[in-house]
Length: 198
Image (tube, rainbow, N blue to C red; front, top):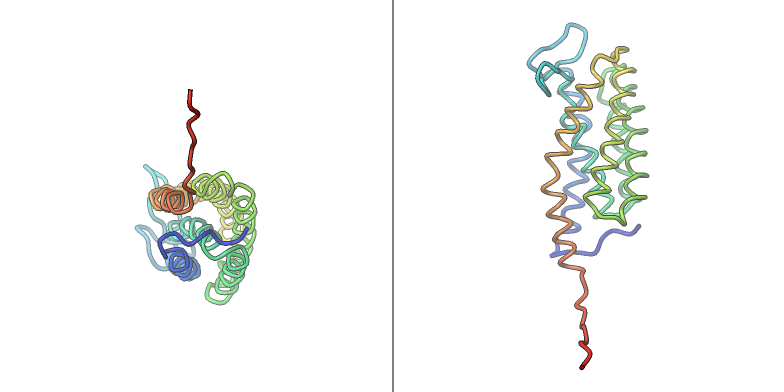
């Protein structure tokens, strides 16, 4: 699907900002896991609370945001830029993370973001909000399952990972709704309706 039409001149700028933020999420999430949290496990991740009594590796917030950002890249710049963004993100993850985190990040990232891209593309005609939320939820669940198993060999963090990522998708909803509404106003044709005379 080609990029959306330019609504108010924001389309390309939104795409480039989303692309830069998406690519930045990868190294930032890996850095957070290793350096920032309310609790840092010896030879394990740094954790943050994502729900009452549930902790998750601290990179989950940025990992969750990456799904929505990838959708916005595709929405504003097109599918080829979205594919390029996923590949660039995978390469960055492979370069900057510790060996175990690098493998977990690359495998989980490439699989989950590719599935997100495919689901988003399939649902896009039903609206930006539905397509982005549905594809992000599917992607974040896959990412959580794959990443936690490879990185930590323990499914204990899967629920927390999924909840933390879901918070970021939820936080992005107002932006997605605003974009969908702005786009709807900008591209709706003026329809002249002729009222028949009685």
